[in-house]
Length: 460
Picture (cartoon, helix red, strand yellow):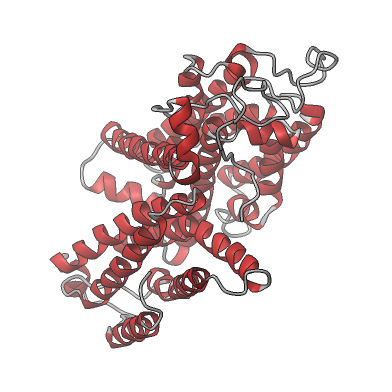
């Protein structure tokens, strides 16, 4: 770990650099159209690599208690400082002052807090009093990094394109919040698929119960209200305004039904049905540009495919979940049965290949929706690109993003305190292995069972 005195010096340097950089409230045509210089390109790619790959990897290594966590995060802090300076030292094209610059300064606070907590924890003092709480806070701040990084990179792309100003802000909020929600939904679904099934069994709730609560609460939350009402402008309600509003009602009403049908560990297709209906509405969402109409249609078809794949998974592919597999309960039609071949089999099961389809399609849907604002598609149209090329670019990014997601999940299950269990099971692929939890797994033949950690265990 770097010396504690480095942090105040580094923060003072970054604040001085930011104060010295001129922020523009107005731009001349020459400033707005100037070429992007090398320093700014280095800033973009460096910060994307650090916040999009390095810090999430360090977070995962921290969760698995790997010895590489501290070196990786320390490297990330140093590279972030370099990228911060580059962002304020570039020449060439200038940008209006906006949320990206403000967020960069705000990010200094969690970075300083995380760094200070890391140094404190390395001192191993106050073991029975302050340190346990400091460890929890360190974990909470660390887990927030992917969310903070996603928001800042989004704001950076918006600033670079000059989007979301004036009357376009509402549409940007609707597309970026809902698109990010779909990506988060797919990410959580992938986590439950690859390392979280044991946790699902322990909770005594089916995944569809959790899905239904998320859908219902999303519709009732501020984010849901933003997506429902931000694209309504003026006193007259257009067809699009009515569609956006009824989608919020659909999610709220369907979420309540899904919660009820998923009670007592039962599976339900209602969350998937809501996704299908949302996709159908978007596929027939008329737009001003033909390009925009076609991109929205592909987004809708992708979302419908995700919902259909989820229904097939729930009804025919996915394992059933139970807390205690006993003879009196395992065959009840009201309780999810764990007596399925793909639950207990330690070897890879072909059905798991299909189970990657719903989360990937949700990630792809989120990216497509985020890339379908009027400003973005007018830019694409003005540059002579057709919808096929544009959609394939988004799917290519979705492949890369889902690859990063599953790679990080696999890293968690094979590093740090989970490495021994991964070595015993021979886990060379991103697949679930047979759980070693005593409450729902067969007693092993050996006297000593391998150490293992699953999502949901108490952290130190």
